[in-house]
Image (cartoon, rainbow, N blue to C red; front, side, top):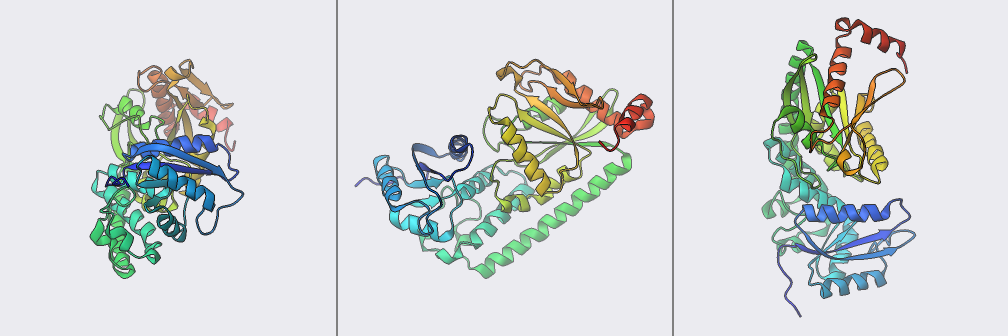
Amino acid sequence: MFERPSGGNVAVLVGLDLGRRNDSESLQELAQLAASAGVECRALVRGSRARPDPALFAGSGKVEELRQSLLEHHADLAIFNHDLTPAQERNLERALSCRVIDRTSLILDIFAQRAKSHEGKLQVELAQLEHLSTRLVRGWTHLERQKGGIGLRGPGETQLETDRRLIGRRVKVLKDKLEQLRERRSVQRRARARRDVLTVSLVGYTNAGKSTVFNMLTHAGAYAANQLFATLDTTTRRVYLPGAGNLVLSDTVGFIRDLPHSLVAAFTATLEETIHADLLLHVVDSSSEVREEHIAEVNRVLAEIGAADIAQIFVWNKIDLSAVEPGLDRDECGKIARVRLSAKSGIGIEYLRQALIEAAASKHPLEDQDHARNAGNCAGT
């Protein structure tokens, strides 16, 4: 028998086709998530079922195939592209003699690695503890020997070994601290509202290029990388545009399919910058073959947090990868609805600035009578 490596960083991925659309794309996304978490993925076990098995999620034959794959590839971690119940995780770990995590735990781990600000760390810890509290029925013995690892990073072993009552106390402390930070943000927003400054929030699917667009407009130097969830902490900058004056631009966490509800809830304080924005710049990876599904997923999360009715301008990014010409498209009312650009190269940036100038003018209609009359003709559309 080989000696399994420690740390939980060598994995086999598991994806069962349960009749969902874009299953292959979802599995590719899982591989990207695992890579973002620092996991070396050595194999993929696939299968299909009409419905999950209550005990093991997969059937006994597929679990045996997974066990053999883990042994063959010297892997010590199985990552399921699905949400597992506590009982399923426990039964699978017994059958496979290794750690088993689901998609939600993987995303939580990435968030734990990437959160840099005090507020971001508080939000991640809250989401992790609320997720873990549902799994206390498993007991802590299997965690004691893991020494952390993918899916358990953040609160730390000592906290993971506490009982539900102590976790509940910590959750309350975290919620109180986040409420204080939320109130501080509210005060800042009220001050901006008194100055009547246009507030713009960047939203979009993870890795669509939001932070690159943000840096292009603000020269802020925010971290941007070709990886999922490169940005977790909201960054806000004031930008001056000739013809528009000052505006406030915020870069926020990216969205993803099946984003855990606990994360959406925990990041409410951060996402409030989106909820209270005057305008959303919805950044889309124009080179993606599933961009329409990504747009729908982002809009679903926006509806969940109460931001569905905020005006959007689509930013068709990465046109250098999709052979699309830079430019802009207007709706039937003459308003800019979409801008085509490459944030990486800067091609088309002038069209985005034009869109922001027009948005600022619509916030102060008396300063632009022609724009006001045009907008009035489209009222209620």
